[in-house]
Image 1 (tube, rainbow, N blue to C red):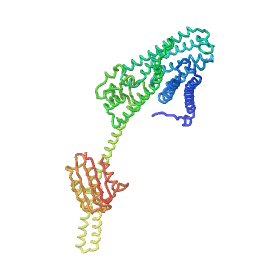
Image 2 (image 1 turned 135 degrees about the vertical axis):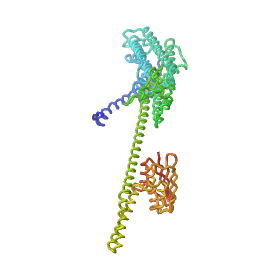
Image 3 (image 1 turned 30 degrees about the horizontal axis):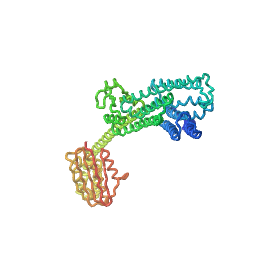
Image 4 (image 1 turned 90 degrees about the vertical axis):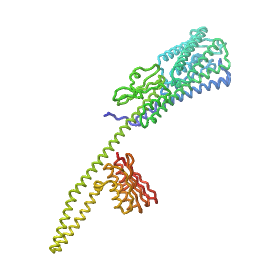
Length: 606
């Protein structure tokens, strides 16, 4: 028994939840608007003032910078929809916003209290993109190495920002900027070496992350490669862009057309993130199809091969819990103790349990563990298939028990009717026959003594007794056909044909005697069918065919009447169908107007 407690009403739940939902949407819409406006406005003002600072100039570059920002913004909005965590979306929007800082720097150089901050956050987009790469694909920093890298780059960025604020003090005549009011320790040399150190540390951290991702990609199995299919390339190109930027900063080197490579590499990262998430989501949707594969029965081998094909993990194995043995088995039914206890390198095990106990263990590539939703989908699909299989088996057992119970009731009814018919035949009927004989003897004696009045009374009593005896015989025949007891099914059907008002052609070929319940069912169904044909069909001829094939007997009753018969509630045809279904048979009625009626009964004789 599960204890429950009343919960709040729908309005009580919806009203408080609406405010945070709309507040979240409003905040996200504001962030997206500010990021787009900041990038577009910075490029427009740079073009109007023809002041690009150290950045590449021209309309083409303006389009490139805006396109990269929009790429991050669009992918950020998509990430909010796809990823359970909101962090990747905010990282992409933040990267797009601070991507415009480089364009704003030359425009705010006249304000001394502004430009040091803008110059300090110019590279913040790179920090956010680095964190985005590390939290792929779940949106969380799960590994200790990832958290250490984020901590190191955060400290390095904070030192770089503090160095710009404290040491950067270029000559106004050289940079065209106002004096830095925060530079309490002005030092061009310190500012220069801090810039070099920031680029070296950033490049080292990027290369570390790139090597780690690429090594993991090459050494992992197919699922891991499919999940992160573009990210290594983007990281490599970004590393190249950072090297090129560092050389340009230190040596004044002009990369020419190669300057377009860094923006392209930077623009590849958010689509790679979203694409990987979409791929994993596609895997989850294909996992749902496994329920269709196992809709009829949980075929263990089919389920394992279908799951391996769906997850693109050919080495995937499923170990099934065997309740009688209290141990796991492979899909082939072999013991799996060694395989379960010793997990292979690069593999992970997913245990699937239900309220009724263990169900299975799935050994899969460790890369799939990064997607909790995918593993939840696998567990749900398997649980649903197993539950369907259990419910189907339980339902089949219940149906079988109902059939057996119904058949036992039918057999008991048959035996009871037969006993009643025998009692009437051997008891009341014999007594009435004896009484009729006595009346005839008494009538003859009255006539011999010349008592005509008494003889008439006795004759009338004898006639009434004969009518009662005839009705009793009809009643006994209705309770149980005596002809089946004294003869066989052929003679019983032939008697029905002779009693019918229509010419009836009878063909019975069943070999040995059928079970008594089946013979009685056939007898009453044929009797009802012939009666319907005589009363309603306006037929001229009728035929009855009873044949047996293996474990079934088929009864076909045809007439050449007007047709149009249908199974209706309370009708004779419905009674025939109910009788046949009681013994697990099937009744089909084919009746076309003007073409007669065919009633076909199929009854198992097992």
